[in-house]
Length: 100
Image (cartoon, rainbow, N blue to C red; front, side, top):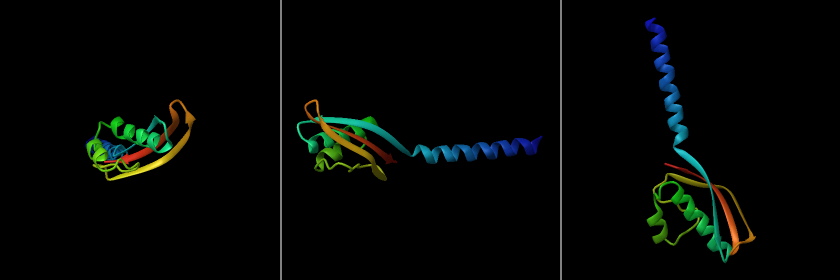
């Protein structure tokens, strides 16, 4: 009985470690709307940071608002982006993975 319990604990710890590794990165899909493509991309990227609890947002705003720049994260990767005419001029969609 003791061996079975030990095996279950070890398996559970392994599952928790795997879940923690996967939880370190999150992918969010956001949208930005503005008069130009560049401004709509900034709006969409700003929404990326806001969707995750505003981490790094102040630094982003103070450092030139470069799309893809994610202060406070180990890595940031835009996995998909698309812009098109619409709403206030341009609408841009971004999917990005940010890792803690």
